[in-house]
Length: 400
Image: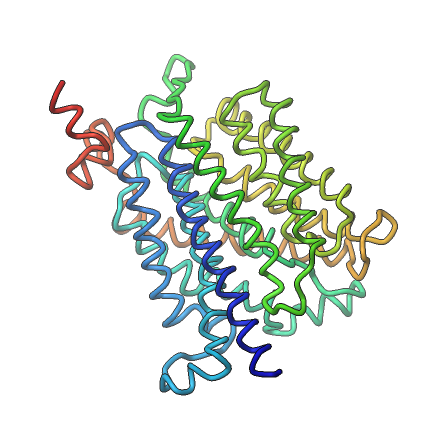
């Protein structure tokens, strides 16, 4: 029976890893559909190569930073218990690799290729796993301190703060340091729209992310005996709440409608194992509304050119999720309890502060040394031709 349980747990978390791996195709197509045609190839290449760099760095360094596990042992040791520790690494790697995938959308269309890969290595090798180890592996006694102070530990079941808020708040200083795309904000005060190149590809990316998210959330149980249908239904309710709120707040704009479910899913991650489904619906709706309002503010009023809106989507909705777990996870609002609003506030603020500091240091150093941005001519030609020497549809352009 023990061997059967080990095999079932390994299969369970492996399937979760595969589902979250598929989400990276969603990141790629969401970015591809949102950027202009001359930057589509770059969007696809970045996500795949960022994932590859993340894998190597997380295997060699990051996983050890977070969990103290080294893979520099014989394969016989690694294969013990059906290789569960290896597939757990695979599953958690897909979370870690989501950080550079999130950042990629914010800095799209004008960022240099190789400096971003350096940033990916530093972020996945140290900045993300350092905080991951604190919140998910009891490092430095921080969780014990939070529990002594508030009565409960900081609760983040599937990473509203640990993954999404951290990714979004790292991206914010990167976007600001990089500056807006050329001709986005003109000297006369006019704003150039830079509309999405393909709503169908944008929608495809959103759908792939949405489906994979059920692996992201449900499989965060990490063993089969801890699986919860509550997590699945809460994820579903937050998804539709985000969609409907974005539909209304975004006035039926298809870009907002397809980012709405993602906003809801980001926000429900932390408390998806605690909330009542109606609470998850409210949290999702709040996240969908926040995304539309804050995306519009950052782009049009504050003139922060965050191309895919990754700071509102992941940074702010992830922050909301961390706090909402302390509200809607409470028994008073139909949740399971065992969570403290004070603990959620402390843990969320810590994640935001660490991410902003990390993003500022990494991208600040890169800007001062290698430079972050394509030249004006390269940006005008597009990242596809400037970096990869080919456009998304060269045969069609040749026929023209």
